[in-house]
Structures are given as structure tokens and as C-alpha cells.
Image 1: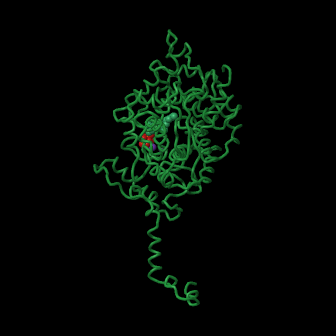
Image 2: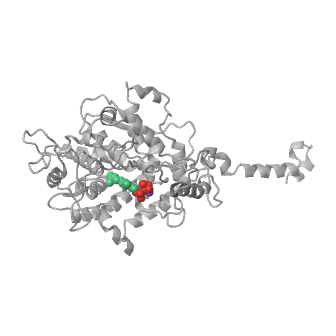
Image 3: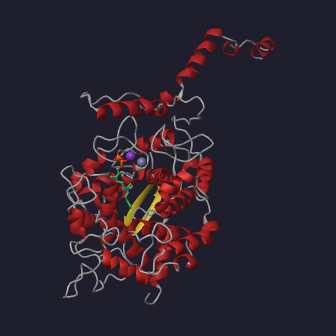
Length: 480
Ligand code: FPP
Ligand code: K
Ligand code: ZN
């Protein structure tokens, strides 16, 4: 083409075919492979590595080996954008999640007591993907009713003992789908009486009557109480009831949470145990409801040491978070650890607090959003027909990881700000500070706009509009 045109017109040297130049240009295209668009930090072996040979260092090395081809853009079957980042397979993941709400194969019998969790994980993940879940309303209501006990709370299935985790999962599911018919499933009076039985004299909550007392209980209980506007008064049957009548469902809870901060700076499931990222989120979520983060965090926690520990959870080159010291990166910690950052930013960056100057530059962050987004989009997607999101390459996708990987992606893509944090009232009810969300103001946005997922409330982890709707519904109701 070029040469025949060149013969009819005055010769422009730029039009002539230079074989050497063409050769160079094709080399140039090779240089433009995704790896060249990815910072060395995320595409090469780590500059510092543990040289003491232990099982821990060996599995860490193996994990880097497994993840590197994915994060450094080496997969010939994957289309990368200009930053070497693959796109989100929305359709594949949505299909996977809808299937997980259907009949599951026999091996899932082991997860029978976690059926409420499957409802929450799938409904929340689908909502993050922008899917309409209102079609599940009737089935959800029927299922939730079958799991509710007259003595209060929800079990994992019909005839199962009420448990705080399954109760939390059912209530969040009902809130996600929303509407009066969903809300009215909940027997709030029985639920309140049951929560009073779980509340302990030392301030914490058990997961079930006679069950273990841990920080999941502290988080799940305050989420339920504040979403449903339950009274804080204790029944006389509560182990935490005091004869002077002053103790409430919240009494001593902050102090109990404080007992879970460990020598490492992280938070453990109960006092004197090992710090874990999932429990850090429970602690911060709980304290964010008891009061605004800029008051409640420093009141009960050593915030700088917690930030140091949480920062150590992000690894390079993987880019994602681990759950605890000396353990491996895993997609679900994109939420459990990733979800701590907006809460901490609200604490450290609050107007008038000493750290506020840190956030004067709007795109300042306490963690590497780029690293997390690279890990999620490169390593956590099952790109086969199966779809769904996962812990890491080589692990099967599942509903749990789909929910928490997408939740973490949402947190990395958005900026949350707590407005008017100087209000004197606790966060429950109206008139308190309001969380506001906007797209994160990246200097350079490495993900495509089409891969922006929905937003979830940084404390309640479900779409923020759904939090307001259920709170307003019960606030406008007289009594139970
Ligand atoms: C260790 O698993 C995991 C834990 C000790 C905590 C798990 C808790 C949660 C995921 C969430 C709890 C929160 C609520 C609201 C119920 P592992 O040893 O398999 O993983 P690891 O090696 O990454 O630590
Ligand atoms: K894990
Ligand atoms: Zn995981």
C-alpha cells in the first residue's frame, strides 16, 4: 500500500518502507507488553525477603511465585488496559453468585449452618456488581422466617440454635433486599431479649447463649442494635444487669474491645489471643457505632500501633493484604483489612485532629490503593466459565471471597468522609455524623471506569442507602 502510493506522488522519506524501522516497531510493541506498564514494586521479586528457611518463608516464596505471572501481566489470554490491569468479569461473577443462591451440590452439606451467610455474601456481592436482587425478596422472607427462633434471633437453618453471626447475616440480607415485608420478618422484641442474654458483665457479647464471647459478637451486636433501633436497656435476665439499673447493652463494650489489642498492635478475637485482620475490622466497626471514630478509637485503642500493624498486612509484589503476621496474602482481607482504612482515615483525618494535615492532599491514602486493585483484578478473579472471586490464584472461587473481594475493591475505588464529626450524640439515630462517598480522586486511575463497583457503608458493609432505609423505618415505629 505505502509503496504504491509513494510511486504516484513526490517521495516523502517518511512514506518509504524501512524494513529495519518496521522490525524496530515490532520490538517496540513487545516493550509495550503489560509488564512494562506495571511498577517494579508489583512486577518483580521483593527487594527484601526472609532468608531464614522455615515453612513460613517457603510458602511465602511459593505465593510470590504463583502470583507474579498474574500481577506482572504475563497471561496471553487476558486483555490488559494501559496500566497492565485486567478488567472485571462482571457477568461471570454475577452468574456465579446467582448459582450460589440456588440448590448447591451435596458437599455443601458441611456448610448447612452457614446458609444465612450464603444469602448475605451473594446478595451483597450481586448488589456491588449492580445487579437487582429484589427478585429474591419472597424466597428470602420465607427462608428467614424458617430460621427465626421464638426465643429471639436466627439460627443457621430451621430448628438450629440462634447464633449472633447467622442473625447478623440474616438481618443484613433482609436490609439489602429491603422493604417493609423484609423488615417485618424480624421479631425485634424477642431479638432484644436474646441480645440481653448474650451481653456479659465484662462488657462483651457471647455468640450464643453459653457460647464463646468474642469480638465478632461485639461487632454483630452493635450493628444489629443500631440498624434496628433496639432499646439499650437490659432485661433483668441479662448477666450484665445491675441492681442500680444503669447498665445497658453498650456498657463496658469499648473497654472490652480495648482488651483485644495485642502486643503487635493488631486486634485479636478475644483478650490474649493472636491479632487478626478480620478482628481489627470488627473492633473498628464496633467502636465506630459507639461513638465517632476520632473519639472512640483513641479512647480505647493505641491508634498508631494499630496503623503500623495494619500497614504491615499489605505485601509487595502481591499488592493484597494478609490476615496476620507471617501469613499469606488473601483476597478476603481486601475487606477485613481494606475496610479498616476508611474508618481510620475518619479518625486520623478528622477536622481539627493532629493528623488532618496528612489528608490536605485529597489523594493521600494510608495504604496502596494501586497495589490492592492490582491484586484484586489480576489475582482474585476466576476467569473461566465458573466465574466468582477467590483467595489467590489456584484456589477455587466462592461466595465468601466474592463478597469480600468486591467489598475491598469498592473501598479502594472510593473515598469515604465522615461529615460533621463534632456532633456530641452517639452515632445511633438521626442527627449524628453522616458518611459521604465519592469516587477516589486518583492522580492516575489504573482501573477502567467500567470496573467501578457499587458502594457499601464503611461500618455496616451494605449499600449506604439500605442502612438509612431500615434505620428510618424502625425509628418512625412506636415501640416494637
Ligand atoms: C484465620 O483463618 C481466620 C481467623 C482467625 C478469623 C476469621 C474471621 C472472619 C473472617 C470474620 C469474622 C467477622 C464477623 C463479622 C463474623 P486462616 O488460618 O484460614 O487464615 P489466615 O492464614 O489468613 O490467617
Ligand atoms: K486465609
Ligand atoms: Zn480468604
